[in-house]
Image (cartoon, rainbow, N blue to C red):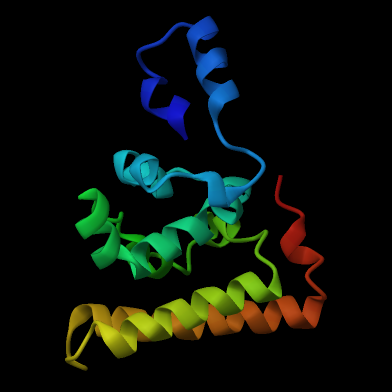
Amino acid sequence: MGGTRFRCYANEETMMRLKAKDERLNWENLSYQDLAYCESSLAFFNAKGMRFCLPKFLIFDILETQILKAQNLSSPDVVFTLISDMHSEYQLKRFSLFSIEQTACVIAFLEYKLANIVQDEEDYFYIKIKEAILIWSQILNNIKQKGNSEYNNCG
């Protein structure tokens, strides 16, 4: 993630050096500071990037109050990424590498947000989260029916 913020400003050699510093093996090594600094990165991840980074973003969102106190960092809006335009081919492709477990985790996260954050059933986000849970549940059913094969062909 570190190299992405310099993409428009650095030459090829600098980009390669920065890219080499990006975490690619263990999402748990991503720092909350980098996530906060690159908060818009969720909008640009491809399927592999989304599968790799989303767990840390979900944890950051859930622990935001504690992290805000300890590190003075606010979490990026991961809910928006998980509920917006979920019928589009673009969004579906970005989540196409998710396993059954990862998809179930997204559903559990959205249910948590619905139960703990949104109070008004007429609220826009309440409605959008409910709709997204239905879509994610359908995605989960599709993965289960297809044995995950169709959802692992994104490159």
